[in-house]
Image (tube, rainbow, N blue to C red; front, side, top):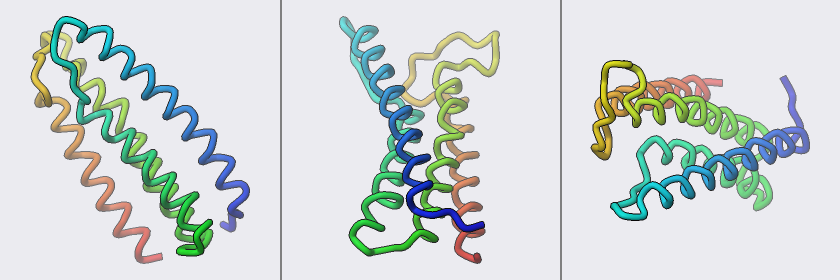
Length: 134
């Protein structure tokens, strides 16, 4: 499937705008909740940031600088989407939401979040291996 850079940039731009909006909401929530306590950036949110970084560098910057073409930009966009798909699941794991009997742990990276992050890491490795063979 041939997808030109213009169409890819449109999709990536919309997705990046949504990611930035979501991240700003998360940061504002952490600031509000942590007014009297410590604030931190959950590892789940790093998936969103990693996805955004892959999009900015692989889809926009690299083709503009002539480092890569449309084919590599498309693969970078795919990697970005794989990371982004794991984000809401990792965030739910951060708040221990997969088991309704589990109370919120208030630990930096609860077990549920670690499990999701592991699954996302396996998916990323699988994607990179598959994308490199095409």
